[in-house]
Figure (cartoon, rainbow, N blue to C red):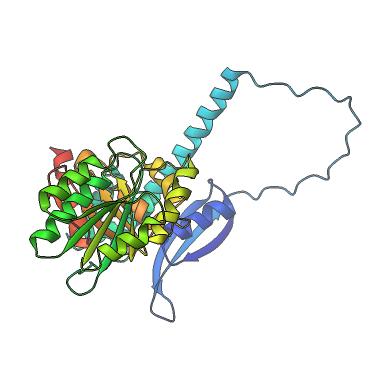
Amino acid sequence: MRIRVFSAPHLHEALSKVRKEMGPEALILDRQQSKDASGNSLWHVHAALDAVAPPPAKPVKPAPQPVAEPAQPHPLHADATIRRLERMIEGLGNRESASLRQALTEGADQRAFDLLLKLGVSASHAFDMAPDFARRNPTGSKTIRWGKRINPGEQRHIVLFTGPSGCGKSTLVAKLAAHYSMKGIRVALASTDTERMGGLDSLKAYASTLGIPFFPLRKAADAGDILRQTQSAQLLLIDSEGWSPRRDFGLKRQTALWDAMQCTQRFLVLPANMDEEDGMQLLGHHSASAMTHLAFSKLDETQKPGKIVNWAISAGLPLGYCSFGPEVPEQMGWMTDHALTALLGKTGRDASV
């Protein structure tokens, strides 16, 4: 029997090393948590493998064979292969979840882990969050980046909101405009959604109701004039045309407009009812478009809000605004670790009813 010790700052990382080095048949003997010289957490996993694989046989040069046309796989055979691979991947995920759950010694932590999985949080993140979540402490405070709330009363902010079509950007911008206007902040609105029929109408109507200036931004040359006309505004909110990661030309055209507006913050808005993989694909573009924060909309339209945890950690961007419905200006706020804990807790209770 071959026994090895694998060490990493997090348990799931150590378990990942076991699978990589010894394969899925490795037996986990023990898990221990300690501190390194700097006082940081360090996990040690003892793993064993019953049999050592024999060394590969010396390859024998095959006799030359006539070249034949490659056989085309039958569609049914290809589908069956894909299904087998999907089952293998699912099995590995279930095995990882079981290992992480077993490493939580408290029953309350294990129940919190199960609930977080049910809400869409990935197993490795659920493991890190479960102890705090079980005790209703601020969840994700150590694993997620939290943005600093903007304060237009102290300095001028030019804030862009962008994301896929229909993600709720315009509604969030309208909510913020109403919220800050009622606080006595001088607000102005602009929009780059000038190519789509009716793209400016809803936000223009909100601006008229609130009595604040509104400007369409059609080309980069318009930016200088808009910035001059809004010099007295403490907060300039910019709505953008929706874009898709499958059609990069829209994003590239928009980026030139955003650069010309000298934005102080750029929020990528992800709707919580979006498929998680589609959201991950969108996040692959945030570096090229120089996003600074994440914002979430439609949090009332999903039973798996935990996906926003996976998005946030994957993107490495600080969290900012969140929106829960179409009402203006209600159901909007700044996402904090306390707000996330309340959101996951409420959805978890509703799901268990």
